[in-house]
Every structure is written in structure tokens, then in C-alpha cells.
Image (cartoon, rainbow, N blue to C red):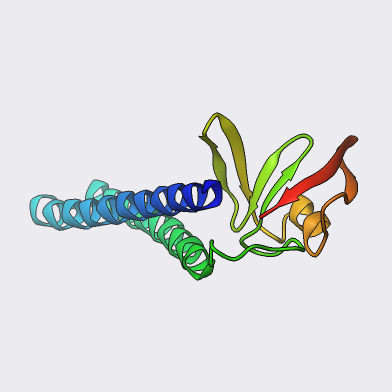
Length: 148
């Protein structure tokens, strides 16, 4: 089923991001340990400070990705929705969206899928709506054709 494929691909995408951030953080930690042994002075302090700032950025991104995965993990993809809710796959005349978390566009079975959060402008428009609902975003008209 398309919704399961989409969900699986987004779970994998988020897990891959988590793995990359964890690897980068441990690599930076290792570099700072090695750097601490070998140098002294202002350059050393600046390098350590830069590594620490980078590590904080990565830690923040890692935390965001873990939160995204947590939201995805709670979605029951076997549930079919009559009204749009978190976990709904929504087909309109112009695009297909997966209501979950904001993630990059993916293509499955030659269809472009956009993962959006329910708090996004489009998500807010869609939540609780049903088939045949019409709305406009950025002067583009949309009609909900299918919800699963």
C-alpha cells in the first residue's frame, strides 16, 4: 500500500539523519580529545570553541530528528481516515501530502509526496477536512480528492 511505503521511506530518511548526526558528533568529540593532547595556546582554544559550537548545532539537529522519528513512530499507517488527521495521506488535484512532520519531498511509484506538519499553513487548512473540500494557497486552487 502506498501509505505504508511512504511512511517507511520517511522513517528511513529520519533514521539516516539521526545516524549521520550521531556519527558527526562522535567524530567531533574524538577530534577535540585528540586536539586537546597535541596543542596549546590561543589557536587551540579557538579550535576547541569552534568544535564545541559545531557540536551544539549538531546536537540540536539530532534532537529535532529524534522528535520527528518519535512523531512518525506514533502514526498507525493502517488507519484509514474520513477526515484529515495526523497520519493521513491526502491526494488533491495538484499534490499529494502526508500529514506527519515537515520533511523533504520524496517520489514513490512516480508520485511526488510532500510530508507536512499539521501546524504548517497547508496543514492548518487541511486538518479536519474531508473529500471534495476546496481551498486556496498562494492563489492555487486545491480540491481534496482522496484521503487514506
